[in-house]
Image (spheres, helix red, strand yellow):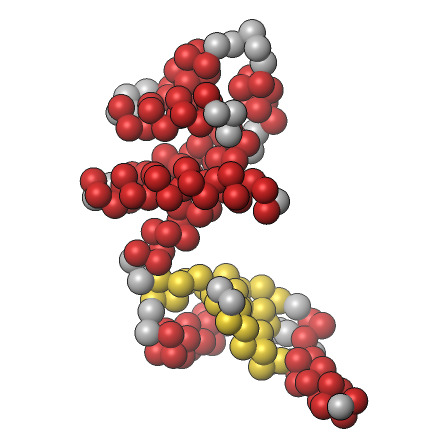
Length: 178
């Protein structure tokens, strides 16, 4: 997984710079999202890897799947990706692009894990508290993990806020052993 991200990073950075300079972050987000979905289809991977089809034919097919008239920048991007055999890296390119886009727009992604299901009001309260603490807009992915026993665990990038019972018990056990 780390290798694909390493391969995808220069492509994502280049597309991000192009999109930012042209003011087309939203359009590129849509294009990369669609290309990512196409790249995850095993049939598409088989077509791209099949030597029976030229790179130009595959490029035409991908442009057609995107809606036909995609523009020179998108066509060039597809050509470069195909020429360098990076089709399978498209999901990672899209993911990195979305990360750069969110950072540009002042938004961070928070992963909230709760011991019990949270209602919308509780999620909104957590998001507001995080937004105030981080001074950024917060988009949240919420999941449930009963192993936490109680409380929540929030991860934002490299920052982890563990306010779960399991986390507190683990910290207590560590301090007792020291």
